[in-house]
Each structure stands twice: as C-alpha cells, then as structure tokens.
Image 1 (cartoon, one colour):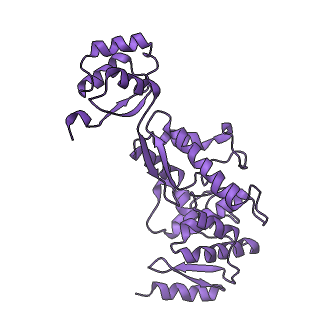
Image 2 (image 1 turned 30 degrees about the horizontal axis):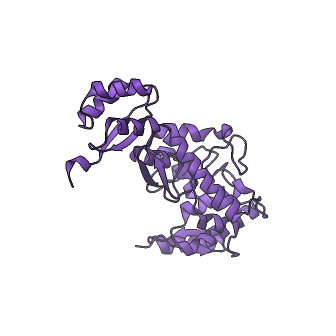
Image 3 (image 1 turned 135 degrees about the vertical axis):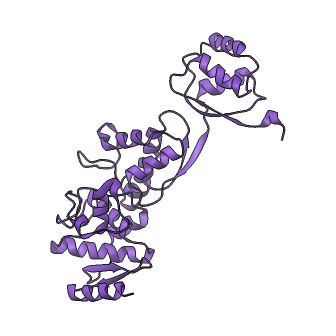
Length: 305
C-alpha cells in the first residue's frame, strides 16, 4: 500500500482554533500549506465549525476534503464492549481506556439522570447504576462520547429489558422494575455458572420472603467501593453502608452493577427451591442448603484442604 493511502489519526480537541488544527495537519503531512488550509477555512467560514474528535485522514485527501470531514464531524468510530456485571465506575474506566471520554464525565452524567427522557420508570433520586445494559456498542470518537454511550446503553436496556423481557410493563411479582434489576445485579455478582443463576435468585428471593438479611458478599464489596478486596474479612462485614446486606434487611437501595439478560430473567423467575443458603466452592460453583446446620457443614466441607 502506498504512503498516500496510509490512514493517519488526528485528534481535534474542543475549542481548538483553525490555526492549531492547521498545525496538526501540517505536522502529520496531511496538507501542503498551513496558509492555504486557513484560507479555505476562512473562505468556507468554518473556523468555528471544526468539530472535536478523532479523525482518520489520508495524505491523498485534498485540503477541502479534509475540511469537509472536520466541519462535518465525520469522526472515526470505536467498538466498545461493556461486560456483564460492570459497575458504573468500571464502565467509566473502560470508556477512558478506549479514549472515548473521561471516566469522571460518565460518572457525573449518570449520577443524576433527572434531565434524561427515559422510556422506563426510574425511582426519583436513583442513579443509572444497573440500567446501562452490557453489550457491544459502536461509538463515535468525538467530544460528548460519554453522553452518546449512555444514550445507546439506555436504548438497549429499553429494547432488551423493558420492552423485551417485560413487555413495557412493571413486573407482575412482588418486585417492581428497580427491585428486579437490583436483585439481578446480586445474581450477576454472585453466580459464576449459568445454570446457578436461577438457584441463587431463588435463595435470595426465599430470604426476602422470610425477612432474613440477604448477607450477600457482593453488596459489601460494592459498599467498599474502590477498596474492594479479593476476600472479605469479618471486619468488612461491618462496613457502614445502606448497601451492606449483612447490616440491613431487604434489597440494597439499588443495583450494584449492570446485570445481563440471563441474570434479569433469573430475578424475574427464581427457581422454586427450599434453599436459604449457599457457599462457593473453589471452582466458582456453589453448595446450596435449606437449613443453617446444613450450611455450616457445607462450609466445613468446602474449606477442607
């Protein structure tokens, strides 16, 4: 391939002047003359219309073609995959890793979504934790990509969960949409095996019905925030937080991650089982028990060397 066809990436920052852009293009060998490019900018009256973003440009493009791309905002796109079980902060960090925006920008945008027009009900004061649907998205690499990604993920949630799994209606069971997504996020965090998602949902649903504390380790990890640990200590279970289900009955105030569809379906249709307890094996599977005594014996078996 000739050098004239080699694609070169040029990033235009918000507020960058025509002179600064001309310097970028000249340094990259994309234009022959800064002066001619600036004449074209002034002639086209595009000095204030050069849109920020990451552009893929070629040296064989004319100055006017480049100007058209910059003024038209024809930025490069990026594919970004958000795994199931990611928290808002993890989504934000991945956004920054892909150079799609700043992590703090996404966290800020999702902390108070009151100004967003949502097609599904969201409790007053709730953040978008749990509602950014995990999937793969194509996002333009330009200023405001945080808002674009949020919009795409909310639209996907509306399509797959609210209109898809729920048919555009609140769930028929004891939990509303927020409760289902919250329960699903616990299942997402606790279940390592696909077949165990309905079982874990069944255990948590049984404990909710009996008024038992859920005592879900994943909620403590969420309460610890950036201080998450590979293994919780007894002192961690006393972490003061409304999300700590060792201290508080019922579900936490909201989701602790973005659950996938399998976990949401498990929360909607928990397995009808007698179990009230489970303990994890080393391979990620769980031993389920109906009584506390059985649970204690299961713990001893699991922890034997």
